[in-house]
Image (cartoon, rainbow, N blue to C red; front, top):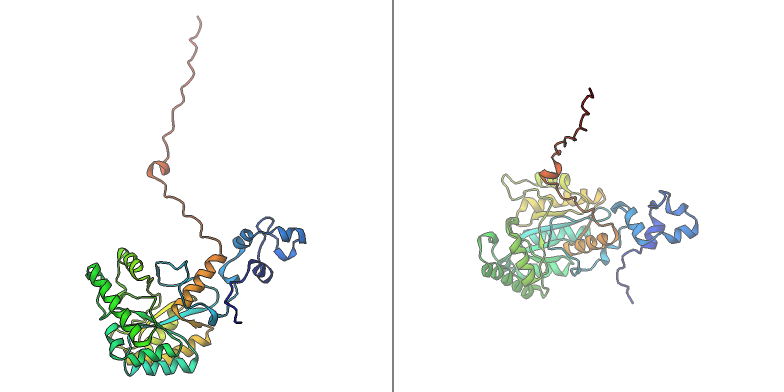
Length: 309
């Protein structure tokens, strides 16, 4: 029976990573057995950084959202050079199949944020996206700017797209991306409450939509901006973007980057957070009264004795 993916145990991390014992600053492996046994999970956590963590089997990462999923993501904090490549505004009847050929040749899985009316127009392309192991997600019905819309209209945009994707491929999307990245905090909460979608933004943007478009610009910007945990934004409706993919994908792979879907990246981010110490609490800002030096109080001088005659 196939085993489900398991987050590396603290014991395995203790033995496999170079860590410091918080008590006496000695490497854990150099401690006597009785002291080694006394090293707690919290001690291990305090000593770990993301660079110490092993990269799990990426193919085994879940394709469902973890309970710890955040309300919004623009990038993630993960071990290894793991990234998610995303494509917006499709499907396109010519460009998307061409892109799918490139991804298939390289064994790369991506996430496609689909326009509802396009998914309804070209359902066969949506079916192929899913059949080849990629993730489909919601990008509204007609690329409307959500911040200009009332709540009922926002939900209608997303629900109609959700239904069109399900009708096209039989798979329900679990993520959405607001067009232009424009969304308010109250809208994020409302969309999550009604549809269960976290908001997916990005940290790498080659601005492939902006004229003059060129494959070279897309390649150069993606390579320059991508970091471990990045979510890359591109648009498969532009021929120049698809033209840039062979060279861009090959160079990212040559630099050691590994590709997963956005939902898999979210799962890896959640697993990583469990193994690392929580961020240090921010110190409250001191008030002006607390930061201003207090005026020195004058000490009462002792009364001088009158000179005796």
